[in-house]
Length: 503
Image 1 (tube, helix red, strand yellow):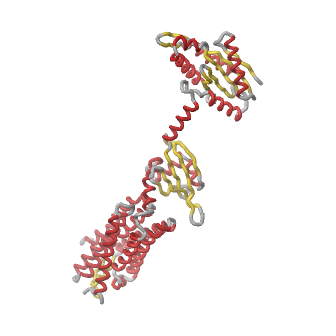
Image 2 (cartoon, one colour; image 1 turned 135 degrees about the vertical axis):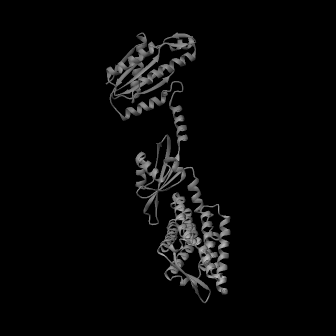
Image 3 (cartoon, one colour; image 1 turned 30 degrees about the vertical axis):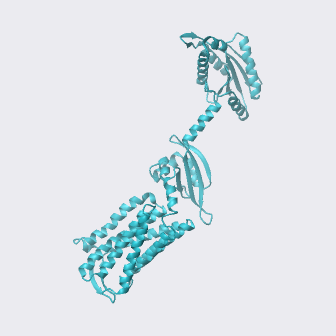
């Protein structure tokens, strides 16, 4: 017959667990709420089974309840570990795989207990012992059972380790939340270890339901007083998971420890492929992670323009322990910026640099690279007559065609600009005297031989070119000389080249 103290402890424990499950049920949609609900359910099964075993009189009935209890015995530690992973976010990427493997592995013990044919593999003998409080079962386990029980300890210790480690590195409020859960797990672990060491004699004096009552009290403390599941790490987890920017957490050696879905979409389907991509294709990013200093830079990766900000992570002793990197896809902003810059720097009709941009770029080149250069200046002969005879649309056709012919002949270091109206200029660094004149002559000849057509009427055009060669003078001086040489070419009959060498 069960005494009143034993009955009171068991029923109180079950009632507390039910209260905890109700509180968790209301927050089940929150981060780790589902995992905590599952862990509480298995703990409830464990408590109900233990109480049923104590309340039963006959040996077969007690064995049935003991077998039912094994569902909670084998699955509660696994569920606790999965809750710890989901709650702290440590190893969350592998949580589903861990769940599949762990539940399958621990399910072996439950199947062996419930199967008559294989029962002897996990239990060698079951005896009924009468105590002053109630009758209890003494189960002698096999080596396989001891191994599976050891795995239970491993899962529970791993869960405690994850929460304990995270509690040391998180905010004060979150630490209070995690401590309430941590104490509950530590109490259950300590009880289980004492139970195994004393061959269940301790369990006869202090039933598992009493321990669950203490664990449930700590869980209620976290749920009701410290808003467990309602504020950080919930908010942290939500931001980490759903924020549009990529987030990469790396260790001191640059290895990727965790990341969010946005970063995976940018660099790879898994953390492993992401790290391989950074090492091989983005060495600048990987080296920055290893330096563990604040850095901000941009780069292209697979046709996307990414802005990367790296922040060092320091522990309480100000020692660098890794980095957190925020990666933002700025492709659209870059395209808009480039378009605005292009429109600001380029002539809208020809696509060449406008006058001011051309002058600024040439002056910058002259400051950085003193040496032989030439400035080619030309304008279109009788361009006003083209506009007057055929209209401005015909003039636009001539301007675009001459610009295209000019661009096709430019070298990698050459610059071309529309200086206004029908006037153009070309800067050629390190240009040899004879080669530059031959280059300008080919351009002049191509333009002169081009047949333009407008409204079915063919016509030709030409350019007069002036060139200034110099090594030391600034832009204003060489531009003035090239302009003068172009006027000389016009005076000589147009469609020709004149040049002057300045020392």
